[in-house]
Image (cartoon, rainbow, N blue to C red):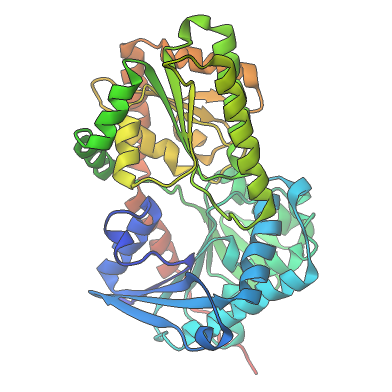
Length: 465
């Protein structure tokens, strides 16, 4: 079988893939171990030009080669902090008001993609299958094609793909879609994302769409919907194993019999954290019998802490938590425990298992694996209730969740009341429904379906000089 070459903005270390990494890293590493291959991308380090040009750094783990490069400060600022996260991320999450377009940053975004592609070319073999991940690397295949690479190349978008009316707000939108058409297969999280891409092709690229086949910009490609998932049995094992660990036992003791609502998100404006806190505040206001009897634990690890927008998010959230706690705290009670730090994966799964409600309410999300992890971590004999935003990709699968519109503060508050009071029989039935979806769309199925489709496509013709 041909080797698999995975390309992502960040590369998980060999240590991370053995337990502390998220589900995606575990799934990708599993595929690499089966076929042998290379995982290539940015190391996460900002380095000098001299060091960057020495790469990639190679590290071997069995049949898998981890190949990483550092980024010079200018490239980091333009490619990562700039166009990727100041323009693409907000627009793809329907936040045009937060988008900042800069021509130099866009030029840097394309330049870094080309530079990374040429770094990878030195490691490629003729029959390698190349799987590129996420919005940082949209032009990656185009750079490879321009250099004469004819290998099968697939792309998977982990965030939403916006409707054409939203995408048009990005000045070089046509160039970006043209770049996507250089892949053999482009995969999306949901049917809505795929429809938005097809809609753009028809209305703005003057292309054609027939089923999953797309013809545009003189190229032909296949699109598909691939529901990314988790390995539910592994998560259940982590959750059970962690129950007896001291940190989890300390939390249980500190709750003193109170109900627990768990939320885990990266610190990001797409996650609806302020709206979530205000919904919990409304719940305490309208349900005085729950004051002192329920605690919301919000874990929000910092992300992109050198970007001003994210610094403001953290300040706003700390203010809201402090304001609500000041209103409803007692000498022995704190309604919201807001933790701006990272926790080991096993600990999070164990906390999910101990909680009565999983509150997952993003304003917009590609899939949201936290929702799936929460369900997988539950005790089948006494499961908690998932309260889920209708704007998360997972909402299309988790029909056993209590669905909410996160913009509706009162509606989310009512959903919390319903979840906390839900009878055991109904909780078990909802858990059973969600688990059936988790097993149907687990991480292995996502990975295998995408790679099967990619391997089934034709090789591209070499570009004529």
